[in-house]
Image 1 (cartoon, one colour):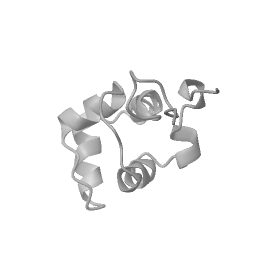
Image 2 (tube, rainbow, N blue to C red; image 1 turned 135 degrees about the horizontal axis):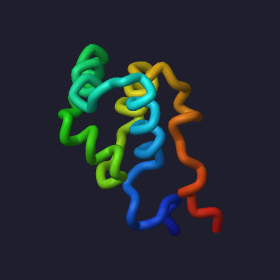
Image 3 (spheres, rainbow, N blue to C red; image 1 turned 180 degrees about the horizontal axis):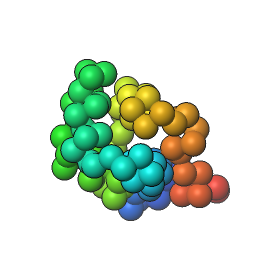
Image 4 (cartoon, one colour; image 1 turned 60 degrees about the vertical axis):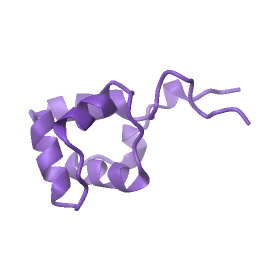
Length: 85
């Protein structure tokens, strides 16, 4: 079965998380700290790896990230990287 995304990227939200975080003038560490309030423990380094697409994201992490960034999940997903085969 074909993967939904290409072999290079491990998630669908990296770029949009980075863009929104910067819009909010939030550091990666601050995002990490706020995620802890939802019981989601993602260190600053993992936030960096999410943003550069080298780390997968669980559904629970996705939910918490959308809450912290005050952005609907659908706006975080970058449909341009989905394999349209």
